Image 1: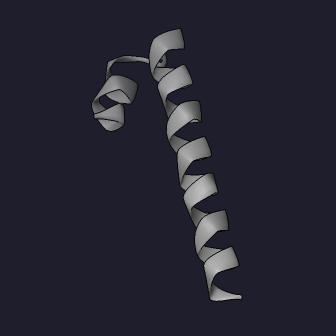
Image 2: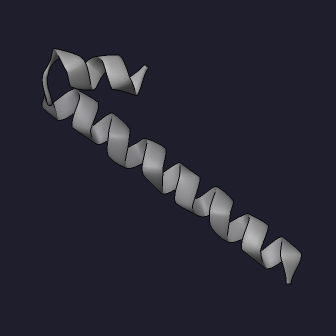
Image 3: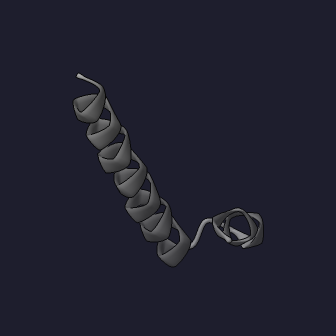
Length: 37
């Protein structure tokens, strides 16, 4: 989990995982918004 990585310390690896995770969440949100239009 990303949360446990953060607890261990903000390493470059966990940070890049966070960025990847949130970019995926953003894409999903955009897809949902477009689907609801």
